[in-house]
View: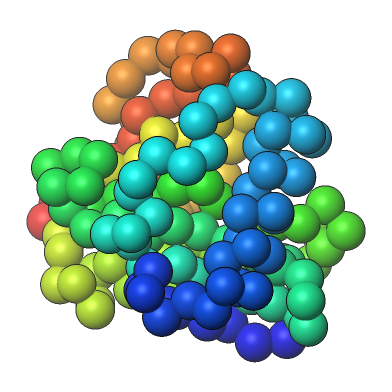
Length: 149
């Protein structure tokens, strides 16, 4: 198993296929959420993923500031159902945060997290900045991590 950080143009066609398959498997099939998976933000993003051969185990899309928010962000956070409970989610989140803060030299990260995960995100220092709202039929909450505080 190996963690990878790749910009869109660095992804092989096989890696891109595996990433999109993992995202569809989790968000569309498992969570039964009909949404526009291909939203034209992948091209500007850094893709962080852990893979084991031909299977994506964990994944997050890291978005530079100005892509979806005025702050840097991450989204499409997932751990393959067959690998949950092994600490991959915590490592994925910490790697995502570290990359944005250190590699991009950002001070703030804004996310749109699923409501049931808000305590998980809070454990990394994220604070809620919105009420719970529905996004594609799933309860979400906006959260921010601010290193200036």
